[in-house]
Amino acid sequence: MQKISLFAATALLVIAPAMAMPPPLPPVEGKDAATLQAEMTERRINSDVITATYLDRIRMVDDNGPKLNAVIATFPDATSQAHALDLERKAGHVRGPLHGIPILIKDNIEARGPVATTAGSLALKDNVTNRDAPLVARLRDAGAIILGKTNLSEWANIRSNNSTSGWSAVGGLTKNPHALDRNTCGSSAGSGAATAASLAPITIGTETDGSITCPAGVNGVVGFKPTVGLVSRTHIVPISHSQDTAGPITLTVRDTAAVMTVIAGSDPADPATAEADARKTDYAAALSPDALKGKRIGVLRDRMGDRADVAALFDAALKQMNDLGATVVEISDSRKGLEELGEAEFEVLMTELKADIATYLASLPTKDGPKTLGNLIAFNKANPAELQWFDQSLFELAESKGGLDSPAYVTARAKAARLAGAEGIDRLMKTHNVDLLVGVTNGPAWTSDLVNGDHYTGPSASQLPAVAGYPHLTVPMGAVAGLPIGMSFIGGKWADADVLAAGYAYEQASRKRVAPTYRASISP
Image 1: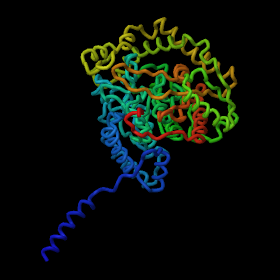
Image 2: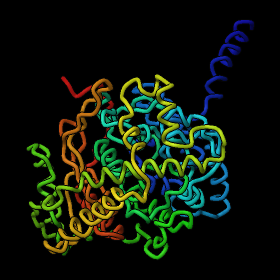
Image 3: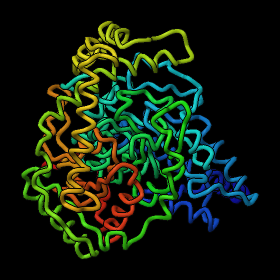
Image 4: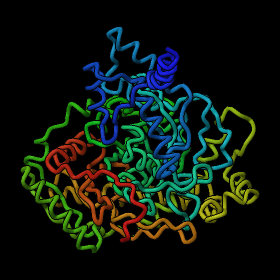
């Protein structure tokens, strides 16, 4: 009798912990937001569980395991946000395709709550503003869950020409999930890596020149830089009011279109967005697998670099588009007459950085902390952790510039806009009678090197649309040695819907996104 009791007690000790264990979290790796939304609609899962799963992946993949350093912080109310949205769904109210979907935002975008907006800098480590940037408020209104903040190239990669993309003093170095010793490009490095690693189905990045499209390209996901003025920049740490914009980084073009439908719109505090309400549309509704049929596509052949393996991917993509009914038009003179564009853009960025960062810092609710670019320079000199890997030569150059009324700036701003717009993209599209332009977004990711900085030498399609302020979409085009390469789609001003539709048609036919493998290196 006593043996039976001992056996029963032992059985209870074994069974009780097993019964107390929570059910295993569902797999979300590689799932886009549309798939998760469908699963919630079918009552197979809810937002509470989805959010818990992504928080668990952040702990396992970002904080431990590969230690990607893609996420700087998570919001402590993420699960309560999810629970409230689940209750709304149960009551029959679904706000749209983003209802209950967790989203990570780049850590130069403000969001209310106890998490600071740092731009990766220790100078802003206590910058808790308790303000939502208008684009964040729009996401919340659409039912999205603000899950956390992503790492970035500090100050959006504008501090030094010797920087290592993806590094910040606050977040450390972001690693590429396709090969951990490879770079994630900048400045939305954490957003690109986090999407690829399924730390959230959607992230938000910002771009001044290449900072959405390059991280999306090298991490093998979709990235979209919209027309400047389509999305508000209020409460986003700035570089340049002429070129800055926020945009989504996602696994699919459909998810990108869903996000753009939500975040596009006018903001009285951002004069550049005056036309946004009149220009925005339902970008997801405009998607079609036949969108390339009958279109003339201009090929930026002279901007694709000289790698034969990248060229092979590009030519295969062009054939795919031709098979979809597009007419491919080769362009070999896209740089003609634009020799002074880089110099003009640089003058604009340096001058606007000094003015715009001062305006942002002055707007912060706290009276403490830096208020000018000069204050930031002094802070960095006094804090060795900030300058341990590279200098602040661009900050110092920007500090030496005049104001927005200086003749050098006024001349450069007019020249840059003219060369990239009227004499750049507009000229190319008109001269060659094409509907949009395509090019190679990026070469294979380079090895990260904190001592020597970036050594990016691959192709880039970002400058013309960045300076002109025109839409630029990158879609996965395949991989070289397991390192993703992106295909760029570029259109004229306000042609965001057409660019997204073209990219969607290519994406649906090609299906070239590759899953990350978290290899230590691509070396044997």
